Each structure stands twice: as structure tokens, then as C-alpha cells.
Image (tube, rainbow, N blue to C red):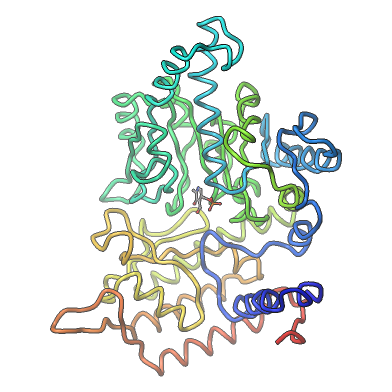
Length: 467
Ligand code: PLP
């Protein structure tokens, strides 16, 4: 930091302010965590200066020996951790990992067979007409993924996302009554649509998924099974999701972020079967720009950490905490979607308190709890105001919190939610503005502070000299 101060003191100060902010607020954002200092320092070095298009041993630039070493190590760590046949660690983010996977599947299932049929080895051997015909075929493929409004991610074929421009995109939703995936309905849709890719995975679904069953469905209709485990990769790594609930042995291709439950640097990875490896490895430069070797170094560190017994324990603790929190919230009279959780997250319905998710999100943040509002399935308040909050336990579990702290957090939620009301103007309640009782706010804040004082973030970092 002293080095940064010499050039851009405002940046150094913002970093310290962020640390202070994260120390003062309970982080319940389901997609965030606290990476280790080893992971963070692995990112902050001269690897950032290297160009390394290609992959280990096959680069478009000279001088990549050390990047090769680190990238090969990260791939080996990922393969060992997840038991995958092949790993690709270059995607800059989860969205990029999905693009790499989509393009790889299109090459594997559409482009390569078309070239073979024409007796051509490379794309540049095609005539203009042949390329135009192939391009058309590539653009005619179908994707079937979890609907955005049922907890799917934007990149899973949401109408306005690039994924829906690459494919003819279709979606399946959760059952409106139960809030759960309905495998018979997915099978029915798959038979009707016959997608090239059946895509599973979520940003806001609180239950485990039977990937063995999804693979059966994919096989029946001749689809590739792709799983985006961005949210629950840490639970797979830590052995929480096993057998049919572990996507890696069942899917042809698995994508993930590295920064959520997996607790690594911000980034993405792709795991796949051997047959897909050559296509996935073309992610850069066909889909991505140059890889970020400093982030790949940090991925290697975090993946190594995730192979430790301590991480296994951590992953199980995340779910224990989530289940405890869901139970305590319900004891406090708060509605938890699907009645609980199997993973690291839950969705609560704030409508019984007469407010929107947006108001609830802002009110709890005022009291020192950071989380995000989230649409419930088929939410009448839409994706902006929403009727729900998404609550996740990966970060508080990293801090060391347990069952008793979950009970206290549930009580703090109750205190806040029963003291928020919408502002009313001309007889109609606002969906954004609200009133929070000052006494309740003060009490909630001091209880949050009391909780956090027992679980300091990076306790060895004292940066007070900057303030
Ligand atoms: N896939 C899923 C299921 C996600 O939840 C997210 C992010 O929230 C992503 C992909 C995108 O990850 P990133 O923000 O790293 O691009």
C-alpha cells in the first residue's frame, strides 16, 4: 500500500475504506466471500504484465515459461480437486467461462462434423459459400436453461443476454407451487425442443440438483449436458454435493466462477470431458482476450487451498449455517422459499412485512448487513423492486461464525423487518422509499457490531496509518 500511496493515494485510501466497510458490515451476499491473503497476494505481482495467448506449451508469445508452469499447475489442481478429465483456467469471469463452453460445444457438435463431412481440416479451407452455410447452422442451435425468473443466470439464455443471440434460447422454470425443479417437466420440454445444450445451474435456487437425472434426459434427446456450478463449486469441491448431486461425473462440460463458495480470485474455469478439451482450449483467442496470468496464479493457490481438509470442513459448515439460519428465520416468522435450503443460500419473502425487496435490502444495509434483493419465482414485483432477499452464508462461515451467530442474525432480521414501512404518497405506498424506526436501527446496528467484534476480518492487517 505504501507503494500505491506514492502514486495514487486516493486508490490506497479506497482499498482501506473497503476493508473498513467489510469489517463493519455482515456480508450475506450469496455470491461473495473473503479470499485468503495468499490468494490476494498471488494476484498482485508482475505476472499481470505477461501476454500468454494460447495454452501451456502452445503460445502465440515468447517468454511464457513461468506462465506455463503456473497455468499447468492450476489446471492440475482443478482436475485433482474436481476429478475432471480436463480443466481450462483462463476465463476472466463466470460469464466468460460460459461463452467459452458454448463456443466449444458448437465447435464439437456442429463445426467439426461439418468440416469432416466436407473433407476439410480447417475453417480457412472452406469456400465463402461453405462458411456461410456453416455459420447459419451454428446460429440455428438451441439452448435450454433455467429461466432467469426461476433463479437461472442471465448467461443461460435470458432474452437480452448475448447467450440468447448465440442460440435459439428456451427455458424451464421451477414449479410455481413448490418452487422446485420438476424433472419430468424438464424431460418433456427437452423432448419437445431437442436442444443442443441442456444447461443446469443457478444464481438463486436453494436446493440441490439431481445431475444424474439431467444426464439421462440429455442422453435421451441427444443433448450436451452443461452445468454452471458458479455458485456451488465450493460445495462440490468440499464434498457436500456427492453422487447424483456432483455435476462433474455427469456433465459433458462444467463451468464455474472461482470467487464464490470456492473462495478464490475473481475469475472462471471450465472442466470438461476429454473429447471437448481441444475446443475448450481454443477459448483464447477465439472467445477471450489474453489470459490474466496473475489471476491464474491466484487460482492455483485457491484451488490448492480447496484441496485441504480444512476446506472440506468449511464447505460443510457453510451448509450447516445456511440450514440453521433458514430454520431460525422461520422460527422468527419469516417465510423462506421452498421451506429451507440444501446449499449456501436461501430466499426470503418480504411481502408479509408490506415492503419490497428493494426496501428491505436498503434497510438492512443501514443496519450493517450487506446482501442483495432478489426476485422470487414468478415475482409480481419484477426483477428491480422484487419481493425477496437472497441470503448466503459463505462469507460469514469464512469468518468463523456458527449456529449461535445464525440465531442472532435471524433475530436482527426480524427486528429490522418489523420496523420498516413504505413511505406513502397520495395514498399509494412507494416501492423504493421507506421509513426505518431509528430506535430499531440503533439496536440492530449495535448488535451487528457486537457480532462482528468477535469475528474480525484479516485481523493481522492494521492499516489505521492510512486513515
Ligand atoms: N453463472 C452463474 C450461475 C452466476 O451466478 C454468475 C454470477 O453471479 C455468473 C455465471 C457470472 O459470473 P461473473 O460475474 O464472474 O461473470
